[in-house]
Length: 353
Image (cartoon, one colour):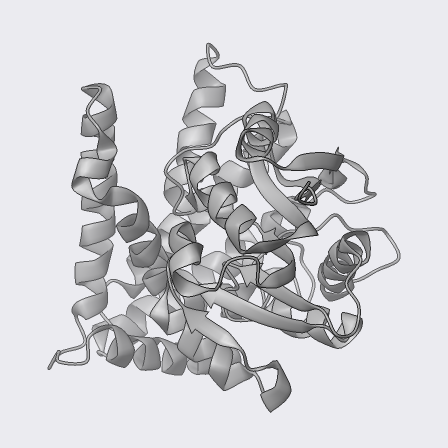
């Protein structure tokens, strides 16, 4: 109950930041409605072969989504908003940290390097990677609420380097060729046009520097003519704030198109004792109970009561429901083997001739 109260308090903090001029606690419901409306517009737009950029849907969708879910993510998952393959002899938290250290090692991070974390969330990976590698990591994130949370959660002032900005416009935020290395962990899945975001990363990376990425992709098992595959994929997208998912081949082609030389690639989610999606299914343990069917039901019942008495904003239970639907879709996608959030690549920006 204490942790649920804490989550409720965080939701109230989020509401104040999202709606500073609001005199009620119903603002979250308005954001839920905006997010739902966005998806309906997206479906209509794509069905009519219109340009979705005319609606400004890509960036706005992600902002709506993370305005809604950040506190739930912290409550149910932790401060690192990503998946990780897990071994039988390690905890969920240990697998998350190991996944981050794996990326830092493969990227070759070390003391004195200036590194960019693209889509840093609330700074969980940034803090771990910076401490582990002794490098100076700068985080960029479009969502202003997450930036505020990152600054609040970062106790060490030497690690508190966060910039609010669109990572599709990195060259407008940072000097050209100003970073020794760049990484992203499950953030650029929100960018449908991979050449755009990878091109911006290319511009701010020094020649000879590497870009490491953990990307959500459709695997070779995905069949666009299979109705269940399409239905599950669409449910994953709506439940996770993603416009659409692309094939791992599209990712490799986009990296090459902007000038990167890919020298390492693998689905690291396939090499584990416990699948990346297993934690979403929930276990009847102290740590995993809140992600089980019963745990979700209890959480929703408590949120419903808190919402009724206006302790948490209107729409909070709705957010919990669509997150649960998205989680169920991810579990099914993992079981089918059609989606992985752990497609790992390392690509080099060539030295100038």
